[in-house]
Image (cartoon, rainbow, N blue to C red; front, side):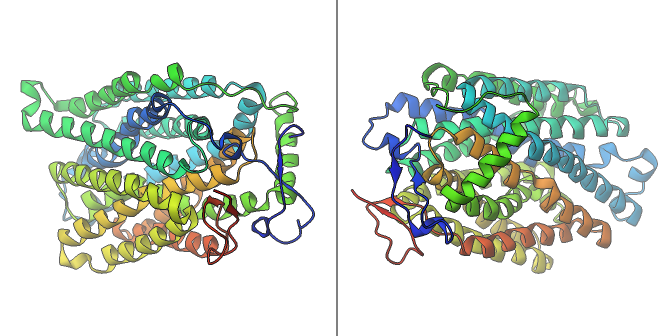
Length: 483
C-alpha cells in the first residue's frame, strides 16, 4: 500500500527480510480511535446469530443425534441392535461418511476463500459478501427440513451441511476482516473474545430451547420421520435471520483498498500468488502464523465437528445427555473466551494459544485412554476442552488482526480460512482413517489430537504479535508498541 505509513523492520518478521519495512496494519491505523459500542455489539451479534449452525446443526443435535444414528442405517442392520458388530460398523460408516463430506467442503474452502476475500478487499464490498454467504447458510439450514428419516436422505443431509460449512466460512472471512473496523490495538483481544463468547451464548440458548421442546414432548406434535430435528434446523435458520442483521446496519464498510487491481476471477489466483510472495518479504510474521494456524485450527475444528458424536457413539450418551452436555460446554466456553480475551490484550495472543493447545492435547488423550472409567471422563475432559477451544480460536483471530497489512484483511483472513478451517483434509481425514482401521469411533479422537499437537509444535516457533504497552523482553521476539 503506497499510502499507508510504514513501520521499522522488526525481528518478528523473520530472518531474510531485514531490509523490508513492515506495512502498517489496519489496527495500527485505528490507534486512538473511539469505537462506538453499538458498532462493537452489532459486529459481535453475527457470531450470536450464526453460531447455532455450528452448535446445534454441526455438533450437538442434527448430526450427532439424527444424521449419524440408526435412523439412517439399513432397517435390517438397525434391527440387529447396538451390541451387534455390524450395527457398530454401520454407525462408523455414517460418521466416516460425514467426515468425507466435510473433506469436500474443505477443498471448496481451500480453493475459494482467499480469492473471494481478495476481491472483497479490492471492491470494498465485504458486507455484500458477508450478506450473500449468510443468506446461503440460512437457506441450507432451511433445506434440512427435507432430510427425512431414511437412509436415502443421508447424502442430502451431509451435502447440505457441507455446503453450509463452506458458506459459513466464506461469511466468516469477511466478518473476521471487519474486526479491524470495531477494535483498536489495545482492545482487539477483548473484542474478538466478545464475539466468540456471544456466539457460545447464542448456541446455549438455542440448545436450551431444544431441551424445553423435547421435555414438553413437542407439545403433542408428531415427531416421527425426523420431524423434530427438521424443525430444529428451521429454527436455527430463523435465529440467524433475527440476530445477524445488525452488522449490516451499523458496522461501516471499509473503502476499497487503494492500488488493488480489479481482475477477473481466474486472474485473481495470479494476484494471490504475488501477494503470498509479498507476505514472505514484507510481513513474514503473518506468513508463518498462517502456516502454523493451518494445523492447530484444523484440529480445533475437528473437536467441534466430532465432539458430540464421540459422546453419543463412544460413551453412550442419550439425546438429552448430549444436549445437556452441549449446554454446559457452551456455557464454559463462552465464559472462558470472554475472560481470556482480556489476557490476550495483556500477555499476547501467542501465549494464550500455546497454553490452551497444551491443555487440549492432555484432555483429549485422557478422554481416549481413561474411557473405561465411564461418562465422567467425557464430562470432565470435554468441559476442559470446551474451556480452551474458544480462547484459542479468539486469540488466533486477534493475532492475525495484529499482523495483517492494512487494506488486505479479507484476503489474509481468506488465506486463514483456506489453511485452517478446511477441516477435512487433516483432522477429518485422520478421523475417518482411524475409525476405518479400528472399527470404533473413539479412536478417531487420536486423529484430531495429533493435528492439535502438530499445530502446537509449529506455533512454538512463531513470534508474538505486537501488544501495546508490553516490551519484547521475554515474549519470544515480540515487538513492543509505545503506550
